[in-house]
Length: 156
Length: 129
Image (cartoon, rainbow over all chains, first blue to last red; front, side, top):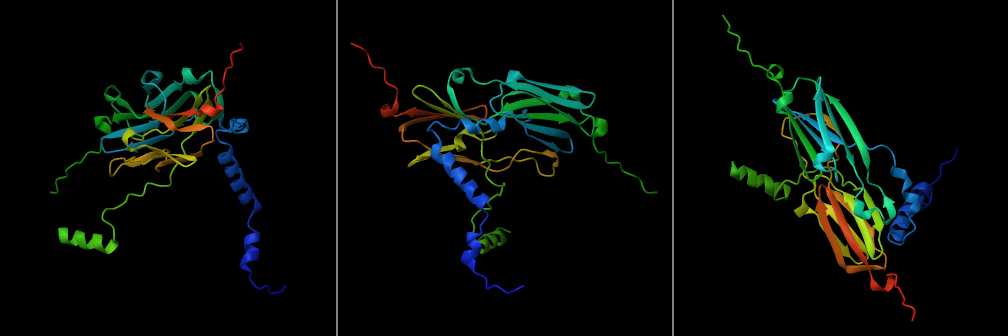
């Protein structure tokens, strides 16, 4: 083995070619956008739709947030059964754009269903849901017996 | 107390703390072509209408929206799937787009941008005499 003097230019030329080709590919997408030959980019996003959620637990309740952009309020169903919260619904493709020629489809459509088991019991009759800017927020108050209790112990 | 705070601000060289919410996320987009224009639809749940910016600079269309997604302090996160960055996406516009008549609308977490084709590229119907 021999020592080779470090040559920064040589290292640069050995830059992974796949990174360069990825950059080229990105440039190609930008170049072609709105020119009409992007049919090959539409196939990558056809899997089932699983909307993203955040579930936060607070002292008195749980707050579930689900990203449902473009879904209408009456197309979402929320059920609570035996400690399992289920959110289901459907996102329909807008009618006005149905007849047009799609160059790119990245957004998710169709039906979705997600279920969550909550670690403590909740007051099912007091569950509250709101929908704002495409985000569904469900607040589930904890049942009295599930809330942490402070017990004062008298020291004799 | 207020003096201590001022000293701290001075020391850091910043007037207000800037919350770091994570990297910008790329909102998914649909592009549909119609006879006289294009409809660009993007899913941007959680963005506030007044905070969304749609700008055309030269040959690009930039869509940006800062995000404030907070959970109450002390919350225990059982699921954390929603990205916490801002939204940002840049599109290159073709020559056939009329830069002056771009219209944007935000509803139910969806941004719809309507772009019209410039007169030069619109299909023309020629009447046969």
